Length: 325
Image 1 (cartoon, helix red, strand yellow):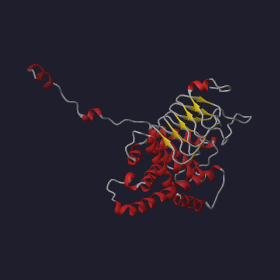
Image 2 (cartoon, rainbow, N blue to C red):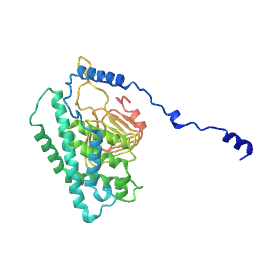
Image 3 (tube, helix red, strand yellow):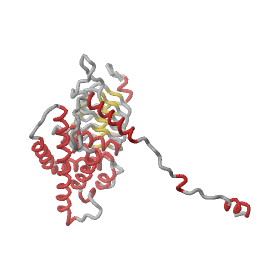
Image 4 (tube, helix red, strand yellow):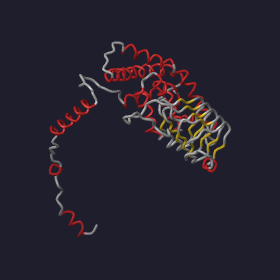
């Protein structure tokens, strides 16, 4: 360092930290008061009564923790804790399920109470209903594990890049999304639609794969790569179906009443029969049927049903009469 530069640096006087960090008046009392007013407006406009205490809705973080615990209990030596050994597998599974199911019970109670409040009901049987639904979910876990095993094997068999089934389970976003979906779909069928939707959106955030929990998906389902896949609420997918990234199974149009409000729950998404392959970027819209064993090529836009064994490319789709795409 030159003498000139050293002299210049020595002449600098450090600014005391206390002189920089000063308390700031954020006007928090006013902001808190205004936020209270906004909440009151929202509750009044949506017909919601003032909360008497406690949490109103299920917790996204709690549900995320539950799914992580359930995944570990379903696949303990692959998705469980690092230190787990096979001789303590059953103890870990039992302890983890006890914790996860009790936490799930709390979230189920919250949803059932929330629904009752929206309906203006006072149901004294909510606690019993919550226990019953969680008990039914718990009893379904062995069958759920068997179904997921088929999904993992389908991914291994369907991807030449997969070296082992363990690699598929640990690494493939499609499997993460399917684990979430299988759990969410059971809760959806139990009329726990808010919990189910939160679970599906956790998977969507983590993988870029958006599967509505209402979608019915058969055995040995494989999503390869996965980013950008969208599967709508009323979609029905058969066994041994394989789809690739950016595939959409969506609705073509939405019906509404005389006031413009959308009709809910109507079948509006495709039916995909067994052994169908849908390649990247394909968009399939409306309540149409893709026949068994068909192959839908990449980037195809399809709004008509196709029979069994069809092979639909961009060129063939564009030249079919009545195809709105």
